[in-house]
Image (cartoon, rainbow, N blue to C red; front, side, top):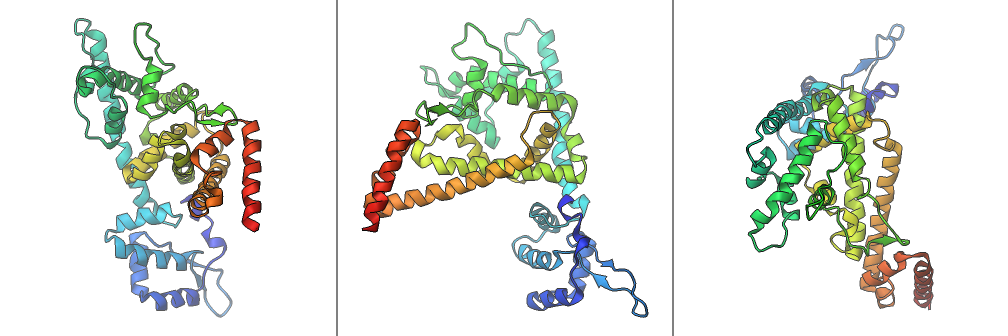
Length: 386
């Protein structure tokens, strides 16, 4: 793992490890077994000393990893489960243990892409059938967790049943996703006779629509405006590489992509949590992303990591890892501040009005209202000191 590549720079002594073993009731035999199983880094010898033989040192972090392994084994019995938890927390793990998971996720992608390509080519040859592959797909209820959420977003009010009324929109959504998977998406189609454009439907499916009241200093967040370019970048990535290529990438590249993925999910969750109680459940279009951040299982997290890795290879597709990390930290601080403000509004009547959701939204609407709001906050603080 990239983060553990320099562990030998500063090692830990046998005495330090022995102290941890005494605390955890772990034996040296157990350490040797964990090392053979690949969840504990190998030891190394320092330069042999004259007349004293060699001195064995343990990689930096060994003591902490022993404690963590002991804790995780109480929760999960399988070594593979413990290994992936350790790897994601930045500990050394033998490469085959974490890479095999990524390869298992990635191996399904080429099969799925070939299947979609076959169905799309059949549609192109069959001019007589009014129904396309994505039309047929839209008629089948999906058991997939994410697609079921998309289906719910695309339900439209009409005289027909919800399933029937959502099928055309769902077919469009599937068509766009199929084009992306084949590396063929460049821009949204804009049919003149349709009620909604492809862009409208995809935005609704991904829950990017948010009220006009979601303003910061008179400006709306523009992630809806960049969705076309973002999807084009994903399409370009799939045109050049596959998830199998990503799963076989260098360890450092995979680790960086994983950290980026984790930070991106943290941004979505923390920013949504910081703003939802003020701007409502559709706050700034982050609801779906925040839901994914909370519900993402191991396979979903692995798949997202591989996609982020491929996107990193597209020039200009992503900001730097440092900027992503800084944004995640800012979102975390915003959530902490939001929670503090909300608690203050609940517990102190002097701040109930000034920190009400309506007043906060108005305060952020433009610079003039922001100035007025800050004066009200200062007045509340002064009254608090009396």
